[in-house]
Length: 368
Image (cartoon, rainbow, N blue to C red):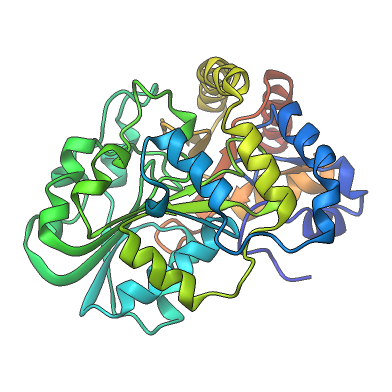
């Protein structure tokens, strides 16, 4: 079985480690370990009868729920089969422009979406030395003018920009005030905020509040990472209604299944789970950050999201292999990020017990 391109490939990990799939402790996919929330499970069970009918192809009730959550009109919201499906249509829009600037290192699916429509891509490298020196709590925002290639400071009247905030895989957080000028410089700006909900509303840097002021802005969100529901495949886009109507015409009907709709409407109202996550993450991340920093040859990067990028003097692919074989622990190597290669790996923040198991396994592998 070929090495996985994304994190979370437990079938590959179990085959490699020659163990049952359920024995793998997965640090490779940045999923909230506290979920799925009981509210989602209850909603799925209560709506099993919905499987006998097709979902509403316009998803009016889900759009209304998402719109109320973000205080927007429903026609500014489009649910999708995960954020990945909506990224495909964003890639089609970007490919129609002269050039798309892409912050790198970049989530691999961005290249997939852009290459599918033969977009002309220009890499805009992130300064990793600035990321490494930022505040561990994520409160020190990364200055775009210094953190990225200065090409972003010029006007790009027929060009697009694709970036994520917080940034994956570094965890860097860009300030909202730094992003706003880009909306006047580019014909289209697509911001992937898949990990933004791990930050409480008072500290997040989302552009959601200004989206109605900028018809050239697209925001992508995921409901599966924060709520630990990746198997349901559910995300949504926030953008001008004309753009979303176009996307609706491009895609297959019934992109979102009935059980995902039911779960989504329930979790959006689950404020208890939201606050539980915001309370859990800072201390768990600090524990993992400090533990990684005490291991020989490892330099963890501070990040604002629920994962950490780690620079390693040892081969990350070899670390991954030894952790799997000896400890049934899966970390994310960074071979799919060409700018990082085999000297970086990424780990999700999990519970304190899980984090300690990873730290113990890494200590044993590094000392062998």
